[in-house]
Length: 383
Image (cartoon, rainbow, N blue to C red; front, side, top):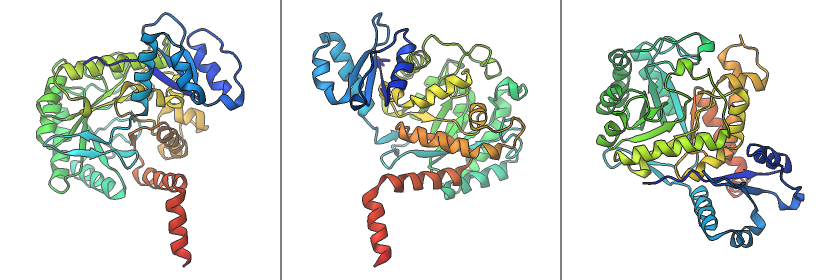
């Protein structure tokens, strides 16, 4: 399977359009306010400039393009507009994505994660917290046994596969004894993934997008499991922040994710089992993280559900004005703002630490966006 990395990048204002075009080294003409929103179509590998198309005139503008570019642009628009209704899981199951963004609760069974290290190192507590997350609104819980925090939070130890297995398997088994709800395991190692999938995990969330362990893709395919492919600079989370420069942050990240999806497909992972994640905080500058989140909708052009994890990260602290030594909980308002941006961009998954707050926030957001349902409920309440 070939995965196209042509991107449709929405711009809602002249300022956004100027910012997007600046990455490719040109300044666009001035568009009247009535022309917005516009879409910037960036053709991967092309030497020419991206194409700017007003949505109100898209049909006629597409006709003016050369046939090859017109075909590629139309395909990119179709991929960006498609909303996958389900995600394939093992044993013939499906995770419903049609009802909106799915909350993925984070359970770190580690002593040194940047935000909550040590809180759930006890397997019983981790299991209880995971089950509580489901009750509080999580659609999936992500269990990890190795910290991937950046070096600025103190260098995390690399965890041997055997130790990682000892951390996550009792938790996965404990959850599975009580709940059939979807579980993912956050690991780069095929050996850990094999054990976790045998213990009941449905999805492998690989921060290296299958690059760290050559056996990972085959392991996921063998179990008919889902795969979250996350972008990270390099292979070692402890050094991922050493180089955070990109020629074109959206284009570079999308191109690498497209390559990862092709690797997954070549190993036998079905397209409807793949999720892509641009990897906020993993080898990105604070401004780079902001840009990836601002234009997150562009990643839907790859044709897969999009996951996003901004919760409590350093750029959230920085741009929301929270002191560096402040508690993790003080990053919640900024994290919720990121959550709103991800939902607005059409993300299928949001990975969060604060499940009840995030779930309530999403319910309120949905109520505000559904005037008919809100009006019906209000009318019923007043009768």
